[in-house]
Each structure stands twice: as C-alpha cells, then as structure tokens.
Figure 1 (cartoon, rainbow, N blue to C red):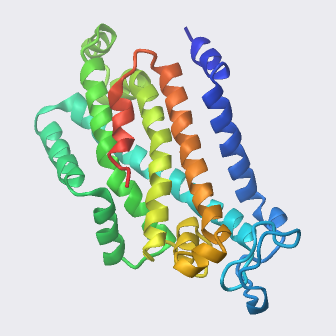
Figure 2 (figure 1 turned 90 degrees about the vertical axis):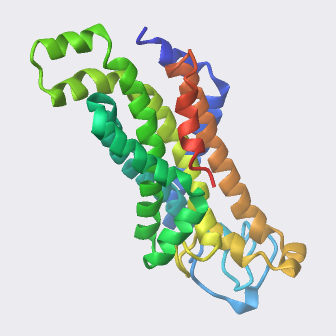
Figure 3 (figure 1 turned 120 degrees about the vertical axis):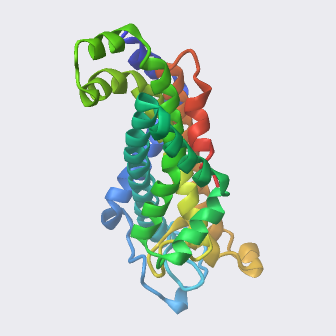
Length: 290
C-alpha cells in the first residue's frame, strides 16, 4: 500500500503540470537577482509603458519599471506568504483540532465555538479588518492569513480525530497506559496527516489569492516592494489597460497560473492519498477562498 500513492502521483498529468509550474515559479523567485535583468525598484520616466521587447521582456509600467523584474521579485512575496501563513494555520489547526477531537467535552466545545466565530465572518472582510487594525506589512499579512486559516484546519483535524480515536489500536494504546500526548502524536496524528497535507496544499493557493487581494487594496505589502496584487492595482487605469495591457496581464496570469498549480497539486494529492475521497479535506481551504 505504501507504494501506491507515489505511483498514482507519477501517473497523474495534473501532478506533473502543477509540480512543473511550482518548480519554475519557485526557481524564478529564488534566483530573482540573476534572472530579473533589471532593478525592480528603478524608476525611468523616459521608459514609461514600453511594450515587450528584447530589453524589457514583459515591457515596463507607468513609472518605467521593468515588469518582468517586478514579476519575479513579486513571486517571492506570494510564495512566502502562501507557505508561511499555511504553516501558522497548520500549527494552530493541528494542535487545537487534535485537542478538541481527542479530549471532547468542554475542550471540543470551546475550540469549535472559536472556530465558528472565526468562520462566521467573510474571509476577505475579516482580513481587511485585522490588517487595517495592525499596521499593514508583510509580517502582518502572513500572520493574519494564517490566523484566519486555523479554524478550517482545526475543524478538519477534529473530524478525523473523532473517527480515529475509536479505532482498536488507539484504544489498546490508551488501555496500556500511554500518555495522551504520546497517543495523539504517535498513533492519531499519522492517521489524519493525509487530508491535512491536502488541505494545506490547497490552502497555499487560497493564501496567495488573499495576499494578492490585500495588496490590490493597498493593505498588503507596501510600495515600492513588488507584489502581484499591487502590480494589478497600479495598472487598473482604463487608459493603461487599453494601451499597455501587459502591465496587468502579466501579474494576473502569474497569480492565476500559480493558484491553479497548487489547486491541481492538491487534487492530485487527494486522489493519491485519499482514494475514497474525503470531501472534508477539500472543503477546508475553500472556506478561506477570497
């Protein structure tokens, strides 16, 4: 059985396409100083809105900045926010979900009511309120996205734990006197990790969308730092959209392609790790979509 998930992934065209896109975007982000060719912050008013050419592969924006350079540096922001925010959501969701599902009673009631309160608010509006209350910055963005995402992750983990904790091997371990922490970490966690990995992968796509939305609204990464959402915001002028569409098409395509890749990878992982199709694993990150 252990070899089947890897074999299923190797045969899945979605996984290959998604992995290729993610690797390319990550490589461009890591090697941004080498592949950018221009300073992403350099303003040249004599080179405003130049079309794509050999000198500027994706043209220039209204301030004469190279779009390709800003695109690859913006990939650093999107990927870092996506991964770091999901690490926060995963840590909180796993800890609270395990405790709620394992202990039940007042612990379960407290955690689930906190999750209900968090999920009761529209995600984007809650993010806007939190970021506006705290000074907008990169750290604030991934902290708030991660904090908002914990609730869906906790509900997913809690649902899985409720099933696994009643299995015979878990009951036997408890009957032999194993400590609760050991039972949760050694026996329950490995049994619920597959849907959690799927949810986290899909959650990265949602986090990238959330960061782009906040940056578009001016509440994400602050200028002049390149960000895909901010690049679209800078190019939203109607005249610019007509005469220099590359300024908005490039970051929009980058967001769409990257989000699609993580969603396809999540779908492929779901089919490989969970062939019976636990819908809850997919529904968790969809709650955080903006």
